[in-house]
Structures are given as structure tokens and as C-alpha cells.
Image 1 (cartoon, rainbow, N blue to C red):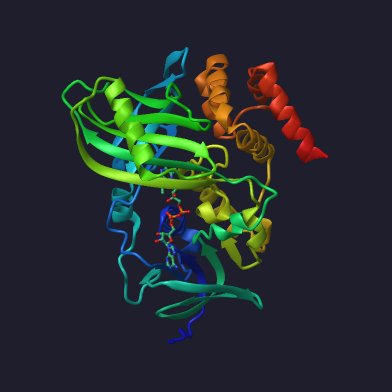
Image 2 (cartoon, helix red, strand yellow):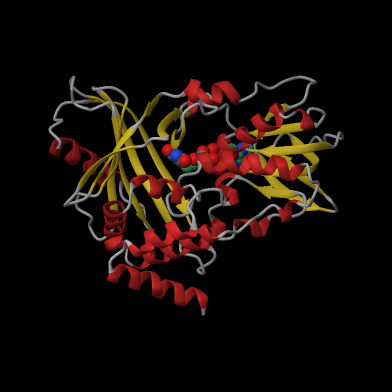
Length: 386
Ligand SMILES: Cc1cc2nc3c(=O)[nH]c(=O)nc-3n(C[C@H](O)[C@H](O)[C@H](O)COP(=O)(O)OP(=O)(O)OC[C@H]3O[C@@H](n4cnc5c(N)ncnc54)[C@H](O)[C@@H]3O)c2cc1C
């Protein structure tokens, strides 16, 4: 095995969303222009392996790459249908292939940052540096940022519930006029729940084309057929009987408040899903990663050990309580979301999910739940607190 002698400043393990967002930010900040940075990724990243959606104000960094964006959304429960304007936000859809094409650096010769296509086999942090072993050699750096997610860390503990946001999505082409391209369907809970928390999610790109996803927040994955039947039945219910499936995607995103930071060291930081940058209560990761990367760059300039990067806030605790409740009452999960949307302006909910609300607004959200639901949260709270 080759051992590269040159010591690097930073190694980024994995060139997916978090690895590339970090590399992009490092390249754009002149403070880091002399740093020797190596990105190691096993795949070529030339296919569309996922579609990211997120909300932010218009004029964001990725606007020119978007496949679509919307100013309005709908939320549906068995007894309410709410259409709302997202302003000042827009809901945005970014295809990963477009993102990789723009930000995945081609393997280069001598100049930094360098990219290496290799399979990482081990990452070891010791004696003030970090070693990354791969099938193409071993590399040493002052700091390593690791986005390789190992689900085993979640399975081998029971203190924190582990749910999943899991789904199958179809990109379909339907007859003209099938969709209203001005609004997304954020969540439709008016479907059989089968004792779990299930909803439909639709992102229409125009009046014929849309991404239609059958999604669950629950512990166990389903057979493929069950997701697909869910999509078929829903399309039939909304009167779309003829359509062509253009593409499919499948996701299984961990939802957990597990302290991913516990495997960080002074020289090794876990990033992306591996670092707990997935919003535990929703599975949304992309924008969270953008924000964490921004904070990380400021942090790196302070030259503190990477163990000091992690910050826990009250939103972590809210997520923990919600996951405790969803774990225990998964069959009633839809009621929580239905009640939250019925009793709050949707923008308050989006700001809450962005961790930007005041404590007063958070109390308003809590007080919008029914007495029975507040009881679930109180019981989760007392279990965690004592
Ligand atoms: C289908 C799907 C749809 C999603 N949609 C959304 C969404 O709409 N909004 C949202 O906010 N989040 C979404 N997510 C969740 C999250 O944003 C993504 O999973 C995101 O890609 C996570 O970024 P990451 O860097 O942590 O992991 P990844 O993007 O998976 O990057 C990890 C990288 O490490 C590489 N790698 C793994 N093992 C090795 C190895 N041994 N050696 C070398 N390289 C290795 C992988 O090839 C990969 O490129 C979605 C996830 C999926 C799967």
C-alpha cells in the first residue's frame, strides 16, 4: 500500500452533499487558500442519486442550479386543506446531478485542493493528527472531516429512539393540466395510516411533470410494493390514471438525537448525516449542512480542537421530545402535524424547523396541541428530565 508522505492540512472524506458544501466554502474563503486539502470519494458522482428540497429566501447560493422553485404550498389533513404563501421563503428543488457537476472537482494533478477516487477503509485519529487509509494509499492530515455514515452507531444504543424518514418517489409525466405548478403539496396526511405516520408529498415541475413521494416517519422500512401502491392509489384518488414513470428515487434518512459528536476528536469531525447535521425531527439535511458549514469555517479560524465545535441547543431537546412521542405514538403521529398546521401560521412552523423562533413562539406552538398530545410531550419530558 502506498503511503503518501506529504502531510495535508485537511482531508474531506466523502464527496456528497456535506463534503462538497464544505469544499466549496473552503475554496471561496481566502483564509484557506494555502491549505492543502484532499477530497476522497469512492464514486464518480456523475449520476442523479437524490433530489434535495429545502426552503430559504430567494437569491440563495444555489438558485441558478435549481430544477424548480415555488412560492406557495398546501397542507392536507382529513378535515382541513390549507393553501399558504411561503413568503419570505421559497421552496426549492435541486437535483444532485446538477450540484455534483458544478461542485465535484475533477481529479487534479499538482494543485490543491486535490480529489482522489478511492474507497476509504479506515480513519484513525491519534497523536495530534489523523490517518485515512484507502485502497489507493494512506493519507495524513491535521484535520479530517468525515461524512461516511455508519448506521451501526445508531443500532448499538437504545437511549435515543431512531426513526427514519423513508420514502419512494416517482418522477412522473401525466396528461396536461394534472398538476398546479404554482404550489407544492408539502404533506397530505389524508391517506390510510396503517398505525404509522404516513403522508404524500408532491413537487410539480409543470402541469404535467411532478415528483410524487410516499413517505413515512417510522421505525421500520416497508416492502417496495407498499410505497409504490401508496403512490398509485394516491394518483388514482386525485384523478391521475395515466402517467409514465420517468425516474424513481428511494430514501432512508435517519431521524435521531443520538450524540453523533461523541466520536469526534481534536482532529476528526463528523459532518453531514454522519455528524448529526440531519434535522432529527424531519430528516431535512441540506440547508442544515449549509448553516453548519458556515459556522465551521468561522470555527476553524479560531484554531480550537474540533471537539469544541459541537453545540447543543434547546431545539435539540424539542426534537428529542418529538421523536420520543413519535416513537411511542407512531400511529397518532399525523394528528400532531395536522394540529400544528391547523393552529399555527405555517411560517411560524417553518421558522421553528429552522430553529429561528423565540421561546415565546415555541410556547405558542406547544400550546396549539390538544390536551392529550400535551400529555404525551409532558410524559416524554419527565422521562428525559428525571
Ligand atoms: C434519496 C434522498 C433524498 C433526500 N432528499 C432530501 C431533501 O429533499 N432535503 C434534505 O434536506 N435532505 C434530503 N436527503 C437527506 C440528505 O440531505 C442527503 O442524504 C445528503 O446527501 C446527506 O449528505 P452527506 O454528505 O451526509 O452524505 P452523502 O451525500 O451520502 O455523502 C457521503 C459520500 O461518502 C461517499 N462514501 C461512502 N462511503 C465511502 C467510502 N468507504 N470511501 C469513499 N467514499 C465513501 C459516498 O459515495 C457519498 O458521496 C435525502 C437523502 C436521500 C437518500
